[in-house]
Amino acid sequence: MPELDGGPPPLQIPKPAPKPIAPKPSPRTNTTDASKLNAEQALLARQAEAQKAEQLRLDRQAAELKAEQARLDARAAAIAAEEARLARLRAEQEIAETRLAERERQRVIAPPIESAELPEEPASPRARPRLSRMNYESARRACTRAGMDEAIDRDFYSARYQSAPRLFDHDLRGVMRMDDRRGYVLVDTLCELDDDGLVINFEMLR
Image (cartoon, rainbow, N blue to C red):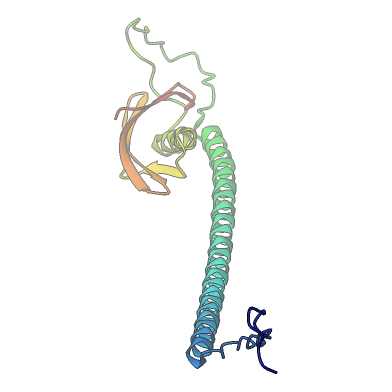
């Protein structure tokens, strides 16, 4: 149909817009995600192995500490038993020495003099009485007991004369060896006795 002069132009029907095409996933992106996942899994596996090794080390250390504690407890029990045994031996020794000293004292006591024919010697006010009712061995035993008591008071196990002590009138002097856990020490001692052989004073001179 011919267009009329001055008439409107023919209608233009617009074409439909093309549909957008979704981009395809990049193969490189998928590969990167998989690598990261594998790396994380490997890290977690290493951490789990490290924790397992640390737990094994702690368990082994705990077992060693338990064994060491058991050894220390056994040693402490053995020391306590040894101290009890030594205390029992000291008590038995003291009883035996007391009995021996008593028998010795009864043996050396002189019978009373019934005869009045012997003149009595005048007693000097300055003269010190002699040990008439004891001898050297009984004096040594008595002073050994006194030294043992002094040693126990000072946390020692035992005390005995290192060499033969010397008796001066009523005094017994000598060097004593005193033992303890660390070893022993040597001490000069002075033991004073009365007429009946009983200790009236015991001193450590150094």
